[in-house]
Image 1: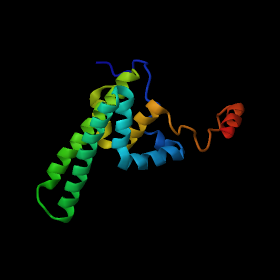
Image 2: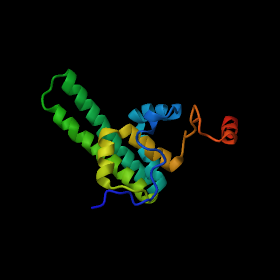
Image 3: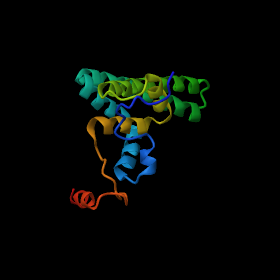
Length: 162
């Protein structure tokens, strides 16, 4: 099995871009996606497969994410035993719905990768993965706050007028 890239396209932003570049829209997006990921999944599903598919993905992901949070809080504060394991099962449901959406974006844009990679990215960094899917499909908030010193001066003038 080859580990080299096939040279195809990638997502509009890398997973670590919000941590390496100063773009307030990305940081605001990460904070927003921490709580509103199902809304983004609805927009992605509606864009790729229609409104009904988007609604179903949003309902499943929202229900599983809220159930995860409720069970986690009950385990911590009500001291009900066994709820932590059940809450993790619902978190995995949420991650699977996100990974399915990420795979759909990947297939629609012909982006390199595989479903296993999508699953682990969503498992460990779901807000950034959600923002990455949103950037790839809709291209929101990609202008940097401080341009690189290597930028062409004519491009800097254009960016300042936007």
